[in-house]
Length: 385
Image 1: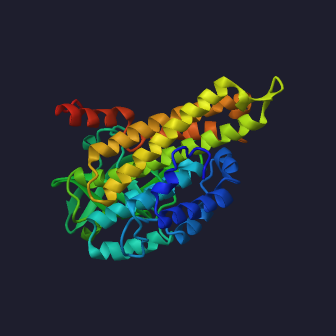
Image 2: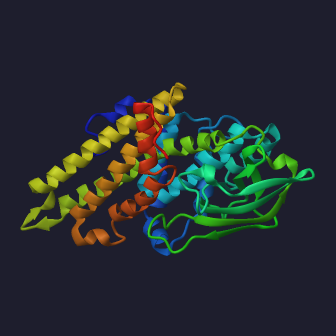
Protein backbone atom coordinates (compact mmCIF):
# COMPACT_ATOMS: atom_id res chain seq x y z
CA UNK A 1 0.00 0.00 0.00
CA UNK A 2 1.25 3.49 -0.79
CA UNK A 3 2.13 5.73 2.15
CA UNK A 4 -0.49 8.24 1.02
CA UNK A 5 -3.35 5.69 1.07
CA UNK A 6 -4.97 6.49 4.42
CA UNK A 7 -8.41 5.13 3.53
CA UNK A 8 -7.65 1.72 1.94
CA UNK A 9 -8.34 3.15 -1.51
CA UNK A 10 -6.85 0.04 -3.08
CA UNK A 11 -9.67 -2.03 -1.57
CA UNK A 12 -12.12 -0.17 -3.83
CA UNK A 13 -10.40 -1.53 -6.94
CA UNK A 14 -10.92 -4.88 -8.61
CA UNK A 15 -8.06 -7.35 -8.93
CA UNK A 16 -7.83 -6.55 -12.65
CA UNK A 17 -7.65 -2.81 -11.94
CA UNK A 18 -4.96 -3.33 -9.33
CA UNK A 19 -2.97 -5.51 -11.72
CA UNK A 20 -3.03 -2.88 -14.47
CA UNK A 21 -2.06 -0.18 -11.98
CA UNK A 22 0.90 -2.28 -10.83
CA UNK A 23 2.04 -2.92 -14.42
CA UNK A 24 2.03 0.76 -15.33
CA UNK A 25 3.67 1.73 -12.04
CA UNK A 26 6.46 -0.78 -12.68
CA UNK A 27 6.99 0.65 -16.17
CA UNK A 28 7.15 4.19 -14.80
CA UNK A 29 9.56 3.19 -12.02
CA UNK A 30 11.91 1.39 -14.41
CA UNK A 31 11.67 3.36 -17.67
CA UNK A 32 10.65 6.90 -16.74
CA UNK A 33 11.71 7.93 -13.25
CA UNK A 34 15.43 7.12 -13.68
CA UNK A 35 15.55 9.22 -16.86
CA UNK A 36 12.99 11.98 -16.51
CA UNK A 37 15.28 14.60 -14.96
CA UNK A 38 17.59 14.39 -17.96
CA UNK A 39 14.76 14.42 -20.49
CA UNK A 40 13.22 17.42 -18.74
CA UNK A 41 16.51 19.30 -18.48
CA UNK A 42 17.33 18.62 -22.15
CA UNK A 43 13.74 19.39 -23.25
CA UNK A 44 13.49 16.01 -24.99
CA UNK A 45 10.44 13.83 -25.50
CA UNK A 46 11.68 10.21 -25.48
CA UNK A 47 10.15 8.67 -28.60
CA UNK A 48 11.91 5.42 -27.75
CA UNK A 49 9.39 4.67 -24.98
CA UNK A 50 6.39 4.83 -27.32
CA UNK A 51 6.65 1.16 -28.35
CA UNK A 52 6.83 0.17 -24.68
CA UNK A 53 3.66 2.16 -23.97
CA UNK A 54 2.00 0.43 -26.92
CA UNK A 55 2.98 -3.02 -25.61
CA UNK A 56 1.23 -2.17 -22.34
CA UNK A 57 -1.89 -1.30 -24.34
CA UNK A 58 -1.83 2.34 -23.24
CA UNK A 59 -2.51 3.95 -26.64
CA UNK A 60 -6.23 4.35 -27.16
CA UNK A 61 -6.62 1.93 -24.27
CA UNK A 62 -10.25 2.89 -23.55
CA UNK A 63 -11.37 2.27 -27.16
CA UNK A 64 -12.92 -0.99 -28.37
CA UNK A 65 -11.66 -2.87 -31.41
CA UNK A 66 -9.26 -1.72 -34.16
CA UNK A 67 -6.34 -3.12 -32.17
CA UNK A 68 -7.17 -1.12 -29.03
CA UNK A 69 -7.18 -2.62 -25.56
CA UNK A 70 -10.82 -1.90 -24.68
CA UNK A 71 -10.05 -1.07 -21.06
CA UNK A 72 -12.52 0.60 -18.70
CA UNK A 73 -12.58 4.28 -17.83
CA UNK A 74 -11.30 3.48 -14.34
CA UNK A 75 -8.41 1.47 -15.73
CA UNK A 76 -7.54 4.31 -18.09
CA UNK A 77 -7.63 6.71 -15.13
CA UNK A 78 -5.38 4.53 -13.01
CA UNK A 79 -2.88 4.33 -15.87
CA UNK A 80 -3.00 8.12 -16.30
CA UNK A 81 -2.24 8.62 -12.60
CA UNK A 82 0.75 6.30 -12.71
CA UNK A 83 2.11 7.89 -15.88
CA UNK A 84 1.80 11.39 -14.46
CA UNK A 85 3.56 10.28 -11.29
CA UNK A 86 6.46 9.96 -13.70
CA UNK A 87 5.82 13.19 -15.59
CA UNK A 88 2.86 15.16 -16.91
CA UNK A 89 4.44 15.36 -20.34
CA UNK A 90 4.50 11.59 -20.75
CA UNK A 91 0.91 11.21 -19.61
CA UNK A 92 0.07 13.97 -22.07
CA UNK A 93 1.45 11.85 -24.91
CA UNK A 94 -1.02 9.08 -24.09
CA UNK A 95 -3.80 11.66 -23.80
CA UNK A 96 -3.08 13.38 -27.12
CA UNK A 97 -2.67 10.08 -28.92
CA UNK A 98 -5.64 8.24 -27.40
CA UNK A 99 -8.12 10.67 -25.88
CA UNK A 100 -7.82 13.31 -28.59
CA UNK A 101 -6.54 12.07 -31.96
CA UNK A 102 -7.68 8.43 -31.76
CA UNK A 103 -10.96 9.34 -30.05
CA UNK A 104 -11.74 11.84 -32.81
CA UNK A 105 -11.34 9.13 -35.44
CA UNK A 106 -13.15 6.54 -33.31
CA UNK A 107 -16.11 8.77 -32.47
CA UNK A 108 -16.46 10.72 -35.70
CA UNK A 109 -14.65 8.82 -38.45
CA UNK A 110 -15.83 6.47 -41.17
CA UNK A 111 -15.07 2.76 -41.00
CA UNK A 112 -12.40 3.22 -43.66
CA UNK A 113 -10.77 5.98 -41.60
CA UNK A 114 -10.90 3.87 -38.44
CA UNK A 115 -9.35 0.82 -40.13
CA UNK A 116 -6.72 2.95 -41.84
CA UNK A 117 -5.46 4.82 -38.78
CA UNK A 118 -6.47 3.29 -35.44
CA UNK A 119 -4.57 -0.04 -35.57
CA UNK A 120 -1.34 1.78 -36.48
CA UNK A 121 -1.92 4.34 -33.76
CA UNK A 122 -2.59 1.65 -31.15
CA UNK A 123 0.83 0.12 -31.88
CA UNK A 124 2.54 3.52 -31.89
CA UNK A 125 3.62 3.14 -35.51
CA UNK A 126 1.59 6.24 -36.29
CA UNK A 127 1.49 9.23 -33.94
CA UNK A 128 -1.43 11.64 -34.08
CA UNK A 129 -2.08 15.21 -32.99
CA UNK A 130 -5.22 17.29 -32.44
CA UNK A 131 -5.35 20.77 -33.93
CA UNK A 132 -8.05 22.87 -32.25
CA UNK A 133 -6.43 25.76 -30.35
CA UNK A 134 -5.30 28.79 -32.33
CA UNK A 135 -3.10 31.80 -31.50
CA UNK A 136 -6.19 33.93 -30.90
CA UNK A 137 -8.74 31.19 -30.10
CA UNK A 138 -7.97 29.22 -26.96
CA UNK A 139 -10.85 29.10 -24.51
CA UNK A 140 -13.25 30.20 -27.26
CA UNK A 141 -12.73 27.73 -30.12
CA UNK A 142 -15.81 29.06 -31.89
CA UNK A 143 -13.60 32.04 -32.82
CA UNK A 144 -11.22 29.88 -34.85
CA UNK A 145 -10.14 31.36 -38.17
CA UNK A 146 -8.76 28.22 -39.82
CA UNK A 147 -10.87 27.66 -42.93
CA UNK A 148 -11.58 24.66 -45.15
CA UNK A 149 -13.12 25.46 -48.51
CA UNK A 150 -14.29 23.26 -51.34
CA UNK A 151 -12.34 23.19 -54.58
CA UNK A 152 -14.02 20.68 -56.85
CA UNK A 153 -14.00 17.36 -55.00
CA UNK A 154 -11.09 18.47 -52.78
CA UNK A 155 -10.80 20.47 -49.58
CA UNK A 156 -8.25 23.26 -49.21
CA UNK A 157 -7.23 24.27 -45.67
CA UNK A 158 -5.65 27.53 -44.55
CA UNK A 159 -4.94 28.74 -41.04
CA UNK A 160 -2.82 28.45 -37.90
CA UNK A 161 -2.94 26.32 -34.77
CA UNK A 162 -0.98 26.77 -31.54
CA UNK A 163 0.00 24.60 -28.56
CA UNK A 164 -0.61 21.42 -30.52
CA UNK A 165 0.93 18.44 -28.75
CA UNK A 166 3.13 16.06 -30.79
CA UNK A 167 2.56 17.88 -34.09
CA UNK A 168 6.22 17.85 -35.17
CA UNK A 169 6.52 14.06 -34.69
CA UNK A 170 3.00 13.10 -35.79
CA UNK A 171 2.09 11.38 -39.05
CA UNK A 172 -1.56 12.46 -38.97
CA UNK A 173 -3.22 15.59 -37.63
CA UNK A 174 -6.88 16.00 -36.73
CA UNK A 175 -7.53 19.59 -37.78
CA UNK A 176 -10.72 21.49 -36.95
CA UNK A 177 -11.72 24.22 -39.38
CA UNK A 178 -14.57 26.51 -40.30
CA UNK A 179 -16.56 25.46 -43.38
CA UNK A 180 -19.75 26.68 -45.02
CA UNK A 181 -21.40 23.88 -43.05
CA UNK A 182 -19.97 24.90 -39.67
CA UNK A 183 -16.91 23.58 -37.84
CA UNK A 184 -15.73 20.23 -39.21
CA UNK A 185 -12.80 17.90 -38.58
CA UNK A 186 -10.24 16.75 -41.14
CA UNK A 187 -7.55 14.08 -41.17
CA UNK A 188 -4.39 15.70 -42.50
CA UNK A 189 -1.28 13.60 -43.21
CA UNK A 190 1.55 15.71 -41.87
CA UNK A 191 3.62 15.18 -45.01
CA UNK A 192 0.95 17.07 -46.99
CA UNK A 193 2.24 19.99 -49.01
CA UNK A 194 1.60 23.22 -47.10
CA UNK A 195 1.57 21.62 -43.63
CA UNK A 196 4.30 22.66 -41.20
CA UNK A 197 4.75 22.13 -37.47
CA UNK A 198 7.31 24.03 -35.40
CA UNK A 199 8.05 23.14 -31.74
CA UNK A 200 7.46 25.97 -29.28
CA UNK A 201 10.71 26.66 -27.42
CA UNK A 202 11.96 27.40 -24.85
CA UNK A 203 9.42 26.40 -22.19
CA UNK A 204 9.37 26.54 -18.39
CA UNK A 205 6.80 23.73 -18.21
CA UNK A 206 6.17 20.38 -19.93
CA UNK A 207 9.77 20.31 -21.11
CA UNK A 208 9.76 16.53 -21.68
CA UNK A 209 6.90 16.99 -24.10
CA UNK A 210 6.29 18.55 -27.52
CA UNK A 211 3.93 21.44 -28.24
CA UNK A 212 3.91 23.12 -31.62
CA UNK A 213 2.69 25.87 -33.85
CA UNK A 214 1.02 24.53 -36.99
CA UNK A 215 0.73 26.44 -40.25
CA UNK A 216 -1.67 25.31 -42.97
CA UNK A 217 -1.03 26.96 -46.32
CA UNK A 218 -3.30 25.76 -49.12
CA UNK A 219 -3.23 22.19 -47.81
CA UNK A 220 -5.18 20.15 -50.35
CA UNK A 221 -7.07 17.09 -49.16
CA UNK A 222 -9.38 14.59 -50.87
CA UNK A 223 -13.07 14.69 -50.00
CA UNK A 224 -12.79 11.59 -47.80
CA UNK A 225 -10.37 13.37 -45.45
CA UNK A 226 -13.31 14.92 -43.62
CA UNK A 227 -14.55 13.22 -40.47
CA UNK A 228 -18.13 12.52 -41.56
CA UNK A 229 -19.81 12.40 -38.16
CA UNK A 230 -18.40 15.52 -36.49
CA UNK A 231 -20.36 18.71 -37.03
CA UNK A 232 -20.01 21.83 -34.94
CA UNK A 233 -18.10 22.21 -31.69
CA UNK A 234 -19.71 19.12 -30.20
CA UNK A 235 -17.20 17.05 -32.20
CA UNK A 236 -14.00 18.41 -30.64
CA UNK A 237 -15.63 18.91 -27.24
CA UNK A 238 -16.46 15.21 -26.98
CA UNK A 239 -12.76 14.50 -27.46
CA UNK A 240 -11.73 17.23 -25.02
CA UNK A 241 -13.91 15.66 -22.34
CA UNK A 242 -12.04 12.38 -22.80
CA UNK A 243 -8.76 14.21 -22.21
CA UNK A 244 -10.16 16.20 -19.29
CA UNK A 245 -11.25 12.97 -17.63
CA UNK A 246 -7.70 11.62 -17.79
CA UNK A 247 -6.37 14.81 -16.21
CA UNK A 248 -8.59 14.27 -13.17
CA UNK A 249 -6.56 11.14 -12.41
CA UNK A 250 -3.23 12.26 -13.80
CA UNK A 251 -2.97 15.41 -11.71
CA UNK A 252 -3.40 13.34 -8.56
CA UNK A 253 -0.60 11.05 -9.71
CA UNK A 254 1.73 14.04 -9.92
CA UNK A 255 0.55 15.23 -6.49
CA UNK A 256 1.09 11.80 -4.96
CA UNK A 257 4.62 11.53 -6.30
CA UNK A 258 5.54 15.04 -5.10
CA UNK A 259 4.14 14.21 -1.65
CA UNK A 260 6.00 10.89 -1.46
CA UNK A 261 9.29 12.54 -2.34
CA UNK A 262 8.70 15.18 0.36
CA UNK A 263 7.82 12.51 2.93
CA UNK A 264 10.91 10.43 2.18
CA UNK A 265 13.12 13.51 2.29
CA UNK A 266 11.65 14.71 5.59
CA UNK A 267 12.44 11.37 7.24
CA UNK A 268 16.08 11.57 6.20
CA UNK A 269 16.85 15.28 6.48
CA UNK A 270 18.13 16.29 9.91
CA UNK A 271 17.58 19.75 11.33
CA UNK A 272 18.70 20.58 14.87
CA UNK A 273 19.58 16.90 15.37
CA UNK A 274 16.08 15.72 14.52
CA UNK A 275 14.41 14.54 11.26
CA UNK A 276 12.19 17.14 9.61
CA UNK A 277 9.35 14.64 9.78
CA UNK A 278 9.41 14.90 13.57
CA UNK A 279 8.40 18.57 13.59
CA UNK A 280 4.79 19.65 13.95
CA UNK A 281 4.93 22.08 11.01
CA UNK A 282 6.16 19.33 8.69
CA UNK A 283 3.61 16.79 9.89
CA UNK A 284 0.84 19.34 9.46
CA UNK A 285 1.89 19.91 5.85
CA UNK A 286 2.13 16.18 5.14
CA UNK A 287 -1.26 15.44 6.69
CA UNK A 288 -3.08 18.24 4.88
CA UNK A 289 -1.61 17.19 1.56
CA UNK A 290 -2.39 13.52 2.13
CA UNK A 291 -6.02 14.36 2.88
CA UNK A 292 -6.38 16.18 -0.44
CA UNK A 293 -4.68 13.36 -2.33
CA UNK A 294 -7.08 10.82 -0.85
CA UNK A 295 -10.10 13.00 -1.58
CA UNK A 296 -8.85 13.66 -5.10
CA UNK A 297 -8.50 9.97 -5.87
CA UNK A 298 -11.93 9.23 -4.40
CA UNK A 299 -13.44 11.90 -6.66
CA UNK A 300 -11.60 10.47 -9.67
CA UNK A 301 -12.79 6.94 -8.91
CA UNK A 302 -16.40 8.05 -8.44
CA UNK A 303 -16.35 9.89 -11.77
CA UNK A 304 -14.70 6.89 -13.41
CA UNK A 305 -17.42 4.56 -12.18
CA UNK A 306 -20.02 7.02 -13.52
CA UNK A 307 -18.23 7.08 -16.87
CA UNK A 308 -18.15 3.31 -17.09
CA UNK A 309 -21.88 3.27 -16.33
CA UNK A 310 -22.52 5.83 -19.09
CA UNK A 311 -23.77 8.43 -16.60
CA UNK A 312 -20.92 10.94 -16.43
CA UNK A 313 -22.07 14.48 -17.26
CA UNK A 314 -19.85 17.26 -18.68
CA UNK A 315 -20.13 19.49 -15.60
CA UNK A 316 -18.93 16.59 -13.45
CA UNK A 317 -15.77 16.37 -15.55
CA UNK A 318 -15.27 20.08 -14.86
CA UNK A 319 -15.69 19.46 -11.12
CA UNK A 320 -12.94 16.86 -11.26
CA UNK A 321 -10.49 18.80 -13.39
CA UNK A 322 -10.94 22.08 -11.54
CA UNK A 323 -10.61 20.54 -8.09
CA UNK A 324 -7.83 18.05 -8.72
CA UNK A 325 -5.61 20.35 -10.77
CA UNK A 326 -6.02 23.15 -8.26
CA UNK A 327 -5.15 20.86 -5.34
CA UNK A 328 -2.33 19.08 -7.17
CA UNK A 329 -0.41 22.24 -7.92
CA UNK A 330 -0.70 23.38 -4.30
CA UNK A 331 0.51 19.97 -3.11
CA UNK A 332 3.50 20.09 -5.45
CA UNK A 333 4.43 23.56 -4.23
CA UNK A 334 4.00 22.63 -0.57
CA UNK A 335 6.06 19.50 -1.10
CA UNK A 336 8.85 21.66 -2.54
CA UNK A 337 8.79 23.79 0.59
CA UNK A 338 9.64 20.73 2.70
CA UNK A 339 12.69 20.13 0.52
CA UNK A 340 14.01 23.65 1.14
CA UNK A 341 16.71 24.81 -1.26
CA UNK A 342 17.32 21.26 -2.48
CA UNK A 343 13.82 21.32 -3.92
CA UNK A 344 14.85 23.57 -6.82
CA UNK A 345 17.25 20.97 -8.22
CA UNK A 346 16.44 18.28 -10.79
CA UNK A 347 17.21 15.63 -8.19
CA UNK A 348 13.71 15.99 -6.74
CA UNK A 349 10.37 15.95 -8.56
CA UNK A 350 7.99 18.37 -6.73
CA UNK A 351 8.99 21.61 -8.49
CA UNK A 352 9.09 19.83 -11.86
CA UNK A 353 5.56 18.58 -11.17
CA UNK A 354 4.47 22.08 -10.10
CA UNK A 355 5.85 23.58 -13.31
CA UNK A 356 4.15 20.91 -15.42
CA UNK A 357 0.86 21.35 -13.62
CA UNK A 358 0.81 25.00 -14.65
CA UNK A 359 0.26 23.67 -18.17
CA UNK A 360 -2.09 20.86 -17.15
CA UNK A 361 -4.18 23.39 -15.24
CA UNK A 362 -4.40 25.53 -18.38
CA UNK A 363 -4.98 23.10 -21.23
CA UNK A 364 -8.30 21.34 -21.92
CA UNK A 365 -10.02 24.26 -20.18
CA UNK A 366 -8.63 26.79 -17.72
CA UNK A 367 -9.79 27.10 -14.11
CA UNK A 368 -11.97 30.00 -15.21
CA UNK A 369 -13.67 28.02 -17.99
CA UNK A 370 -14.44 25.07 -15.72
CA UNK A 371 -15.68 27.43 -13.00
CA UNK A 372 -18.14 28.92 -15.49
CA UNK A 373 -19.27 25.48 -16.65
CA UNK A 374 -20.05 24.54 -13.06
CA UNK A 375 -21.58 27.97 -12.42
CA UNK A 376 -23.87 27.50 -15.39
CA UNK A 377 -24.96 24.14 -13.99
CA UNK A 378 -25.65 25.61 -10.55
CA UNK A 379 -27.43 28.79 -11.62
CA UNK A 380 -28.82 27.91 -15.04
CA UNK A 381 -27.30 31.13 -16.38
CA UNK A 382 -24.31 30.98 -18.78
CA UNK A 383 -21.76 33.68 -17.93
CA UNK A 384 -19.10 33.05 -20.59
CA UNK A 385 -19.63 36.44 -22.27
